[in-house]
Image 1 (cartoon, rainbow, N blue to C red):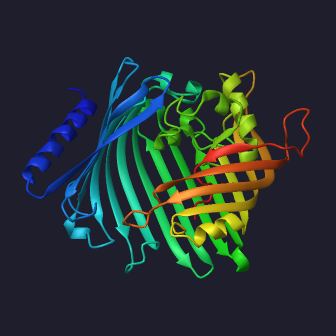
Image 2: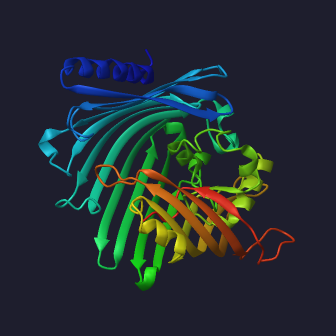
Image 3: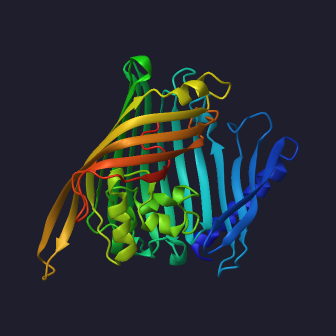
Amino acid sequence: MDHRNFLTALLLLLIPGFVCAQSGNYKLEFAPDAWYNNVDGVRIGARVLGEMEGEFQSGPHRLDAGLWLGTNFPELPVSYYVSFTEPIPAISTYGNEGNLRLKSQIRTGFSQHQLSFNKRWQPGFDELKFRELSLFFSQEKMFDSDYRPYPQLWKTDWKSLIGLNVWLSENFEIGKFDLKAALNQNLVSEASYTVSSIEIKQQIPLPNGFNIRLRGFSGINSQDAAPEYQFGKSYRPPANWLDHGISRAQGTLPNNLLDDGLFQIAGGANLRGYTSQDFDKLANSENPVTYHFTASINAEVEYPNPINSLLKSSIIGDFVHLRSYAFGDIGQFHRNNYQQTPDLVTDIIDTNSDAGLGFQFSLNIPDYLGKDRGFAIRYEIPLWLSHPQANENNFKFRNLIGFGAIISL
């Protein structure tokens, strides 16, 4: 049996074993689930959460799984996701858990099988002040390009990735601070490459309901890294589109909204004013412009609005928020330019910026560790671009919609 299939089978055999072994104290919660994409059609199925009773998703034998059927009956109509987490008692206390996690999924044309070690350090009971570390080994492959809205951004070979993720969250006197860093190495000898990124966020509350939100992002990859890890000016690397159901497969978002640059997927350099330019190139070119290095700064100045004041005074004010803000983004991007001869390669550097106004509606109900669990919808108006498209003025009414907060503090 292929080792990837063996890992999948092992997961599916282990989990029922744990459930049966703990049948007296183990609780399973089932919920129906439905979603849509162009290939599966309406994808129907069920999600299940499993845990020891009374542990509130913090005890042993934690299960998160789903099984679905595509009603269009594509070539692979059945898809699944399963994650099984087992704490390590010797290095775990409340808020300071260390665990092993097995994750396996085959859905929306993507196969992934991962083992990770995860550790969290939290001083006291302040769940917004913590450090997390994750070490993982993953084998994954995009095997069906029909699910991808822009298949030219993907390679279809197997990857064997070893990686490190770090997350630091602090409540400094100046305001909330977050740092996330990631380093991945593909171990396949004929396609070895490194991908890395760092993201820093800082919130600075001001009097009378004003806030400054800052975000710095930088990413650098091997120049021959797979295209799904390369950067655009406005969107997150395509490999990270799979993290969210709204962007996981084509058709959930209407393709014309993406092609026309009316919808932005937050992440990466996040120069939101360049969404239209990025997606116009993706829609009309088999060789899209991507970058192996980027550094950017996103800034938002939030100002009070009466609707949010009404929400804050209501019983839902802790969970629902309407922000209004002015924004500005600036970024530098590096890419290779291959000339007529393969040995002559130059580095092209683009520097771009934008500014405008935005509004964001968010609903967030944090989980037991204080992590965000909700969604955000943005409507933004990039009024000024440093480098507009040909025959456009720098100042122009442009608009876009986005899911996910750019600066989510």
